[in-house]
Every structure is written in structure tokens, then in C-alpha cells.
Length: 198
Image 1 (cartoon, rainbow, N blue to C red):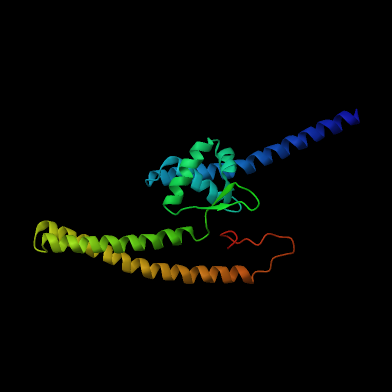
Image 2 (cartoon, one colour):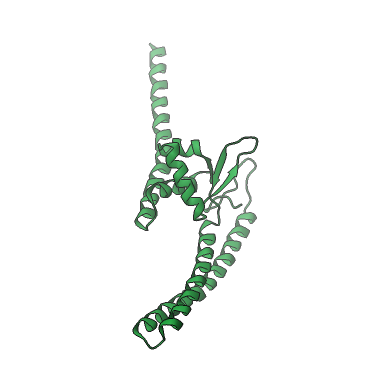
């Protein structure tokens, strides 16, 4: 009879471990879907939003097409289209898997900084075009005044953005320094609140 009790206890332990594993797997999936939905609300297409969120939530920030397809339960064609879009807008980069012909897709730790830096370049181009518009339409016309105010807004944004990006670089460097100063026990993962820094 004690053998039956032991088997029953083993099955109960297996069930509990399975429930813990399932819960551990649900948390990243819930994050990916929730964050992707917020990106969609902000104007991103649904599939690129899911792929981006999945890469962001992955341990290494790097996944193959097959891994993305499996994790998101989507077709390889859907992954391909999403990655193409994300690559075009510089949100992910494509790299070759060492020793293989398979591509891997990477989201970088400085992703948001890089995205804002590119926006800074975009603002410069818009400002130049707006200046031309003000000049060609005339500063005194209603359209010229409207363009002039839009230009002033973008100039203001660009000045503020430059200062903000510098403050972020300083803050990021402090975070990395603090991260490097922490003692990491042998065999432990060297990750801080923001994950490992590359």
C-alpha cells in the first residue's frame, strides 16, 4: 500500500511542477500580447508588434524565424512579413546564425534610444521642408503662419530631444556602472533590473 501512496505523491508533485511550468510560460506570453496590443493602439501593425514584443521579452533578444513562429503560433510567412517591416523601420536587425544558413533576428538593448535618435534626424528633414514651405507660401499668409508654428514646434521638440537623449546616455552609463559594480555569485546570471547589457 505504501508503494501506491508514493506513486500518488509522485503524481501530485508532477502535477504541481507542471502547473508551475505552465504559469512560468504564461507570464511571457501574457506580456507579449499585452505589450503588442499597446503598440497596435499606438499605430503599429499587429503582427510586427507581436514579433517585436516577443523578441523584446526573449532572454537573449535574439530568435530565429522558426522560434518566433513557434512562440507566437503564427506561420513562417507571417514572421517573414513582420520581420521585413521591423527591419525597414530599424526596430530589429537580421544576422546570420553562426555555422548555419538560418537568419536570426535581434532587438538591441538600446532600441528605444536608437529609435528616438532616428526621429531626431526625421525632425531635421521635416524642419527643412517646413522652412521651404513657409518661404514659398509667405510668412504673412494663414498657411505660412500655420507652417511657421509647426516649424517652431518641431524645432522646440528637436532641442528638447537632444537634451533628453544626452540625459538618458548619462543615466544609462550610471546604471551600467552600478550593474558592473555589483558582485555576482559564481554561476549566477549577471542581470540587473534591465537585463544584461550588451
